[in-house]
Length: 380
Image: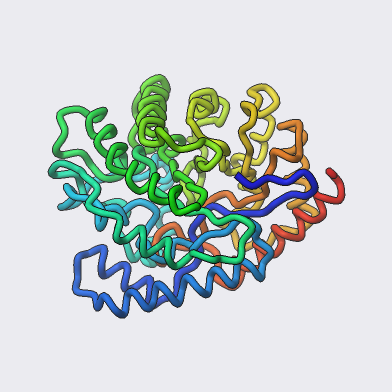
């Protein structure tokens, strides 16, 4: 995993804005409507080339394909795995249910959805990974990208199993293990192609106020342990330094007043066989949690990708604000060489669902670069 002894490197959490037509095509495919494969292929290739160039121009050191080839950060697996069909009935986030007036205010956002994340396909038969055709095509498009290091995201076993309902396996643990075994194929393929793997695991925080909203904290922590253990099995044989783990509380602008504190889950997350944690630290609910790394030190040699850009707000962070956030994270961790500046989450986690205007995404990433340069002057 790329780090630096002389400056603060920059990255982001994965998804970047998709062109409207590509978003429409992904939505159609997710609903199993007829889509011209060649039109989809060309749209993906053109969009990937555009976001790679835009990242480079924004000063991103560790970049990716912007997930242009995927309909969302987890439902894409229905096209790569067997066993999924029908429609899940996923509960809405409890903090939103507690504020129906907020839901009314947010209806235009829901109307932009091209992919039904709350009604994703369910596991109705044995889950297996078909083949590497799609992930190979995705990796091909990013080969030779002009980054110091290139990463590729992949869904965690936990987010697949929590958001894609189990209707086949007798026990949830069996479902998680089956998905982990299947996703191991994708994880290993990405690493074997020389890319840094990012496992996206919002379930490790967000499910506290979704699936486990009405259950004791202990039940949720057992879920976190179950997922981490399954993920570690899926990562067997992969150097931890080639993997980073993204944990978040849901990439939506909302109350978040029921979010589980980072300090409650961090000791278990530290058990993951990964070389870096990607954690939200810019938004108003979690900006203080850099302090957790003082009382619960980051295991050596793990790196922290600190979210210093909010991906749900159209405010463009001032470079001084970005630098201050980086400095706070560095002080809490104790070593600026173990800090990479990133974003709280993705900017378009599901086709058409981004909260930030596309032009402002690149303005925010330029602010990330400027803030990282300012923090470099102060810290090194």
